[in-house]
Length: 247
Image 1 (cartoon, helix red, strand yellow):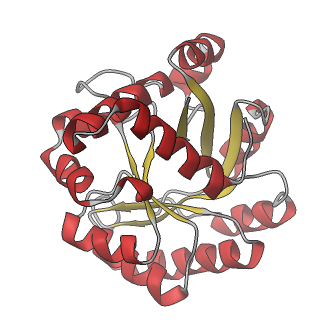
Image 2: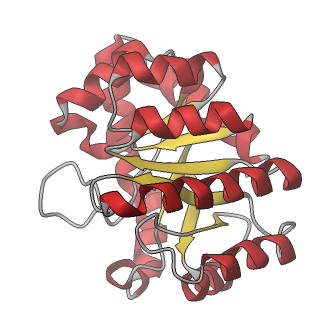
Image 3: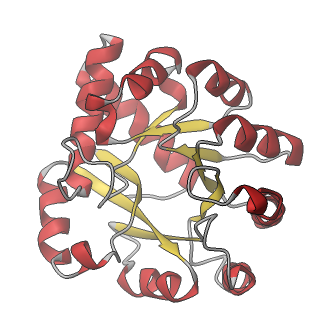
């Protein structure tokens, strides 16, 4: 059994063939998927497709598209019992303008505070900002943290490991030396699996799908030199515990 802790099933390239994608995921052993909304309207769509058996909802915003983020904060509060996580939220110093970085930090802290107050896990986007996102999370006392597709150094990741954070590994690990180093350093007890579908596929240019978390699991098994069943067992236990879901 596998859990995809982060994907975007409401993305147009996936939503139009969602029944087939969910069937393929089940056939690959993926028993649960956490699908993240990005912005107010997308979060509402995420709720519509969540069945709480296979598909579970999370609400967030992209750090470089913060207009109307207050509406998402309000939506999270009103639906806190219907979602399993907040996110993705965080920092993006790659696409985000340098002048917006303080605003990104301010908004990120608001979402962290809400996650603490509502006792919900938080899924963190930290593109080209891993070190800084980890610093903000630690400063705010965040808990139940999932660092999604972390692109920072393995040495920086270890500060998150010491705080009990999880690092979710996408299928692009098979072509990323950085993510392979991350898997080498981070202990299995702090690893989760994600697809980030439709992004971060195993091969550039492909449309990624949740069934590809099997590829993530196989890569972790190979890199760490441990049995695949062990990777599947521990990462699934990690996911079910942090999101407090049953499948």
